[in-house]
Length: 571
Image 1 (spheres, helix red, strand yellow):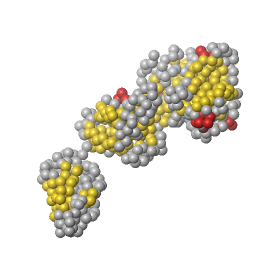
Image 2 (cartoon, one colour):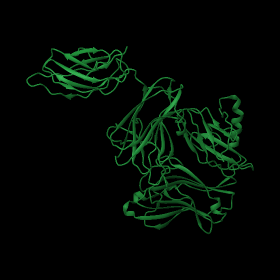
Image 3 (cartoon, helix red, strand yellow):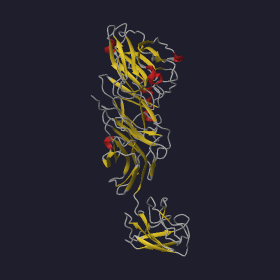
């Protein structure tokens, strides 16, 4: 069962009334730990220091300590020396191969709890075998397997801890081994393997919830211990001097954290005999950025893939997470967000990507625009857009659009106006809910602005060109301007520049005009502009020109469409 706690403030060394608490917790963190490390293996120098051996099961591809594929990993104790079964490096010619990385023997009767921890990076592929097994003097028992999804890939590597007490059975000749087998599969890398004996074990299920820019809520599952301690650091395991915040089972709220900062949570149990368990593997989390105002724009070009842009966040409920990708389909410039397929039989995708928090006002209309596409028309992707007050799927209470069938490689653009009912900080969320075994969904150019009150007309069309004039029409503006439209015709220059060849205005509801000029023998081109301005005099995006046919033996004319023609006028 999950333990329920009361939220309190944490340690703030700068607050005088909390200094005695800080001193007491610092002392507690450096005393009473009764965990015995039986051995640690870091593969320093490309060899096993603790006495690990390799037993070949089949084929020739095997465990190596010299990184034959020149791979680079970080986090969870990884450095340049580690063990790896690199089936991908062995290639097609390696064939089906399997091997065991076997520990030295140890006495499992020496402590109440035997805890195995190791850093790992595992890339999954159908047909791969990977498992941790424990020997109790009679038989091997599987206690863990990463198969079914990537672990620590993409990085950083993760620390995995397994209670092997029951599997070891108190044997004085216990062992454990890492088994990997595959045929041109991917890889499994291991480092910082630690075996500890202790009186009790840290609680399972440690997690950090309700993360904001300055605080978070700590939780874990009660394992029956008499008490608990937790510490937040900026990355390293607690040593009595590096706590940013700490507490016990009676205070579970961490406040006073810095915005947009990486932290690590550690938890341990009070064994009730004056000692503590070892610290749990660190649970990484990052506080949110401070909120920002609109206009907001994200094109994913500020980061190196697969990292997400600063201040964006994810909630990966099932399937794969959103990542930045450097090679989106044509129509998206630079990087884009991508979420890739999961194998057949996997749970359907339920993965969210969130913008930075946006300060929005009640009663104000905002416009959300974004691009999206599929990497193949042979598969169906699904995506929804929504907004809410926190960066998790449950908080996305207002859905804006469901794209139930995305089955094209054309880049699509959606524009949605929405109005919050209350003033506050909101997050725009994008949920991939595709079925398993599809391909890739892309998202780019997320934009949030105040909805324009006067929108650009479009669809400008040449009706007829004369020797010294032109007739043209356009589609009405969606904002139905009360003061009508302004138009320009020019043979050169930009919209709004001085001295157009002709210009004028028309009344509300009129969507045609005629332009006359003395300028002759000028080539005729036309084409609509592409985007709306934010006011009657606001900027308009570049237009695409199209040649128009000229009358025989008569000079032709260059029509409007290279200016703000026509533009809406407001009252």
